[in-house]
Image (cartoon, rainbow, N blue to C red):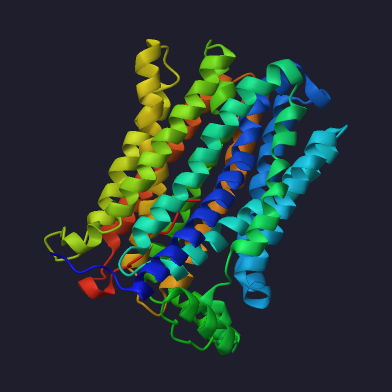
Length: 454
């Protein structure tokens, strides 16, 4: 008979569950706000809402992803100053109010301002939520916990499709953005019920507060670590370019650029491009649901796939090849799936292709981060992955813009082909990076956490 868990372990589990549930709901609203624009875009273009053109639609999609770039790059610094809890509350408030600006907008410029501000909130919330659940994850479950958290982002995408399907036709596109204001009702709950990060409390010297919180829920205090000096951070960045590492670094950055171009390009333009292929609006929005269901499955699979470097999948020279091999294969499968969407197929087959594309697309990008992690030294890993993600976000800005330019030029049928080529380029780049890697880390040098794609 197995022993029952101790009271302190049970309290620690309840705290971890509380944090995961609250962060999951926050990320759900984050996903809803992120994907709602793509879901309502076909209706906005057909009704010529705000006088919007396809080129302007692409620009507007890029405004949100540019805001996400700003939010993601500043989230760490702001969180270190005010705390992760306060930053999450601020980000949820910002993207909810920004959706109100979109709903009230009378011009493309005001709408664009709303999407940019929403992007800042969206970009700041996701990495902060990941840090929070990592802080409270039970031993050995960080990857699984983060994978579960990331399902909320895609659940928000599914919700956005149903919001568009049920509200936009009878009530207009503004109604969808009013729904995205409703998370303001969740903000007081988040502010009251979410505990502050124990790591932040310890780092700020608020040890009594951290000890009291840890004792209340029977969890352990994290070890205090000294923050890096600016000189150390710059030295870590320069280390990515020393010797022969500069080419490896650029290959990883370019692969991440193509991967996120693909992720956000498809997320923004999938319903509109499928409408252009002759599907009705209901079917086009069903594709959004299936794509995000695939993303949920892919994120859960990526939680397990992040352990592939530990499986000792090796080349002849002894270098672990699991993560880059999976990334290259999955980008190839993603490219094939995206290209097939430009071909008229039976509806059931198209549904299956969209679902599988969602599975592979989101996890392929995750494996780029896993590749960078396993081929970096422990002291330089955070810098290597952070900059790979940051450079990739320029692709997230470029993808929606590219789709709009192709549609404006009357080449909407080339949209899927362009996105497929981005997938193929990432496949080649990550493959070449793997072949050129001369680093042979021991298994203990491998990452223990899944890094989310986005």
